Image (tube, rainbow, N blue to C red; front, side):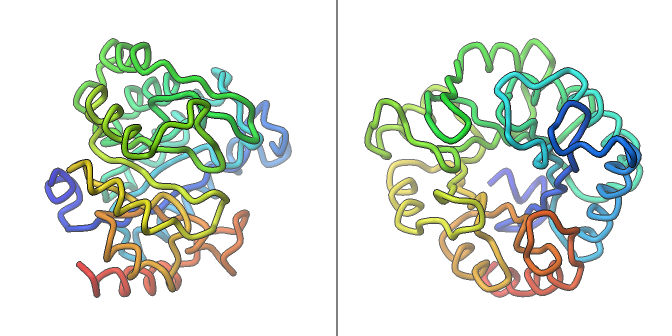
Length: 265
């Protein structure tokens, strides 16, 4: 699989660098400013790498509630932060502009990312309203900005969302992989932090050879079970201080999680 070539390991574990709220975000702190966001990201990046993580993913996670039309300033700030941190990045890295795949590819092109995590298809309804992604437009934009070779990770069903068409999961996977040929399929649970449905992973794997990653619910206690079925995973809250979303990364938890991951790969 392509993951072995990029991450130098089977079943890679990717750690999220949650960027603090940025200008125009409701929770943005103008006193600490973008410099504060940069320093928090620097801390998390170094903690993840010290803990032995296989890859990192930068995302504007604290921009909640998300919008499907992300402001230019958000992408500009993310590019600045990642650009300043690039000399410190020692593992493959990816980007995600939450809920806006077009801007995600813009950012990936600007910073030279190895992979991208975005919702690249489908019409879904959830707490952030209706998300209607045109895969044809997104894919054309991807190639227009020179990201044809970047590895793509896309949700089958985004977190906390439901398909508007209510098609069977197997049919969604077949259509998705045929039309977009993504490098990775992402499985989410229904709520942040809760464990994914292992049976859903098995159902996806029954109709597709595309690698499947768990994209939430990964913790020190769950990583072995998850990697026994999945081809990799993305971890965030589970390796933060006290397992709390808004806290910084805990290097001890990262080391514990990676030690458990090694048992099944």
